Length: 495
Image (cartoon, rainbow, N blue to C red):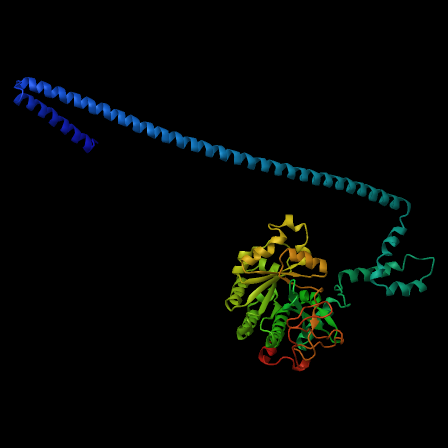
């Protein structure tokens, strides 16, 4: 499309040429034809001049555009070169990593091959020995195999040896073989206290019915000040002889038999009673109470649990509900919904039994987790630096960004405390500071048949904990076993 400026210039040139012809015709007295020729000649020169000037101007514009394009091309070439350099560096790193991995794989394959060779040699040796025994001494072989088994039933061999005649050693072991096999396959596995699973289940039922589920308190201290900040409620069971049974022995049986919900309700009742006593002297103290995964997933049990927590909602800032790491990793729809119901009521969560450092702090913080308890040995293990996505020394800072505090548990030596301070760990728990200790006899739970040394008070609400002096911020009190559950009698009758 012709520009307006070009049309204007053309009109001006025509007017200038016509004016020149008229002036020559009127003033100079030239004829009309000659004046017209002069006017056309002047118009031609003006047109040529305008065309040449426009061509020169366009050429200068094209030159500027070419220069800009050259500069852009040079810039693009530099960027391509930089990208090529970075790509070459990445390829070099990948190649070095592949070479390192291949070396490791080769070393592992070599070790596997050596192990396979040793296994083949062992199989050859065992086969040769079996052939030798089968060819030279066929009769004594069953006797030699039966003799190591009687330690599972020691009374029978000692009773039979004096009566058995010396010339016939083989017959006595044969009658003893069936009881040994039966004891290995039929009887339940015995616990550390000599009880089998059936006896422990009966003891557990009696303890629940007779209200012999007690809690011990173990302090969590600040580092490096070692001032008591929280307590963990550790469950203990008292049998008919008032002997204490640790939670590790009966929790699995309680979960399998469906009794864990009643135990959690009883423990929660004790924790609330203890926490009310502790907060009389120190408002900043808190109690960690363990909750089983089956309790979280059982709608009936959790409904009672939630009703009781709703009635004690004022204690939510100081009552921390603790779950295993495996529980959080295997949450179903029902468990997720119940967990959200607890979080909506202001209760905070803690994670223990941590087996690895593959932790997603953002997801945990969104679900209400505010504490994570990691064993000190796991934090200080040099193998974790390569096995996890983050170095253990940076874990506390990462969790802190999402409002989660790291607690180092199972601390048993001063050397571990010094190393953990370099990791910026704020809280510690373990036998170095104080073991789990029972409440005093007038506390929220009696110690039952515990010895006087076991029934020492857990003292000091703000004092520092030591191995010889456990800490309970404010002593709690309770009635005798038959009168311990007060104030929440309805819930106690339900559980």
